[in-house]
Picture (cartoon, rainbow, N blue to C red):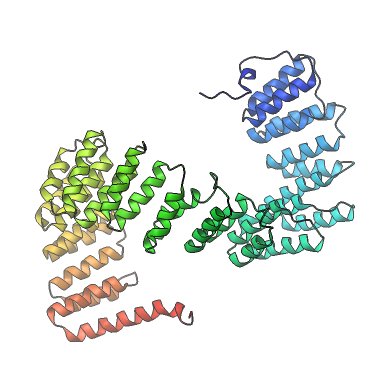
Length: 541
C-alpha cells in the first residue's frame, strides 16, 4: 500500500513546538483528503497550548468544506472571533468561502457585509456562492457594488461565474459574461479561455467554442483546451470533428492525459456504439490504437463494436490480444462475444467461448448462462439451449423468458407455452418481455384464441400495459389467420399510435392473402408515415 506523507500524523498526536509545524501537518491532512484528521490535529494543537494564526484558519475552513458539517463550521468561526485575526481579510474570506461551500449562503452573506475590508477574493467567494445557488439578480447587483467600491472583477471572477451558471445551459448567460469580461478589459488567460470553450460547447454553440479556441495562441494552448473541443464535439454527436481535433492535438505534440476524452469520450461515446453505428470503424480503431494505457473497458468497447457489426474474426482477434496484454476479460466482454455469435449464428465459435467460460470459472454466473441460452437458440441449437436451461440450479425470470423466446424462435411453440405455464406455477411473475415471447410463440404457431387470452391477461391480471411490439404480435397473429379486417379494426382501436412496423406487418399479411383493398389502404398509411418522418429534414440541403 502506498503511504501518503501525512500518514505518520494520522496515528498519533504530535507535540510540535511551533505554529508553522502544526499548520504544515494540518495542511497536509486536508490536501490528502483527511479532513477529519486535520480538525483532530487542531484540537490537539489547542490542548498543547499552541494558538492558531491567520494561516491556520483557512486550512481549517477548507477541512470543514470537505466534511460539509455546518456545526463544525460554526465552531471554527467561533475560534476565529476569539482570535486576534477576526478582522483579517484573508481569514474572513476563508470563512465566507467556507459557509458558501457548506450551503449556508445567508451566513456567508451576513459575514461578508460585516467585513471592514474586502478584496477581489472576498467578492469572488460571495459572487460564486450566489451564482451557484441560482440567484443571478443578486449576482448582477453584487457585480455593480463590487465595481462601485473600486474593485475590478478579474479572470477568476468571470471564470467562476461562468462555471456556476453552466447547469442552466444558457447560451445567453455565457455570452453575457463573455461580453462583460471584454467590456471591462479583463486579461483573458488560457484558464478563462478554456472555461469559455467548455461553456460554449456545453451550450451547443461549437462555432463560438472554436472561435475562442482559435484565439488562444498555439503555444499557450493546454491539454484542457483540446479536451474541451473534443468533448464538445462528442457531446453533440460531431464524432468526426472530435477525432479530427484529437488528431491535431497529437500532431501539435500534446499527449493525452487521463481526463482527455480519448478515454472519457472513447468509453462514453464509443461504448454507445456511435462510431460503429455510423460505420466509422476506422475512427474508433484509431482512437483505440492511440491509447497507451488500455483498460478492460477500452478492449471491451472495441470487441463489442466489432461483434455488433458481425465481424467476429476481428472481435476474437482483439479478445486474444487482450489476454496476451494481461488484461482479464470481464462479464461485459464475454456477453459481447456471446451476443455476437448469436447474431451471426456462429455456433462453433459460441461453443468455443462456452468452453472458455467453463475453464475460467465464468459459467457459474447466471447472466452468462442466460446469454448462452439465447446464443444457442439463435444459432438454431435449441437442444443445447434446453440442456443448459435445465442445468441451471436456480433460474431467474430472464432465464425462463430467454428459453420461452428461444423455443418460439425455433418453432417449438407448444414447449414455449408449457414453459410459460410452469414459470407461473413456480410463482414467477411474467413481465412485458416474457409476454412478448409468449405472444410471438402464439403468433408463429397461429394460436389465435390463446393469443387473445394472454394479451388480455397482461393488463387484467398483471397490470402490464401492452407496448407497440405486443400490438404488432396481435396484428401478425390476426394476419396469419387471414382476419385482415379484424386486424385493421384492432389497429384503429389501439390506444397508441401504430408505427411503420405494425402497418408493415398488416401489409405483409395482405400480400399473403391477396387482399388488394386493405393492402392499398395500409400502403397509404405507410406513405403518410414516411412523409411525416421526412418533413423535419425538408430544406436541409
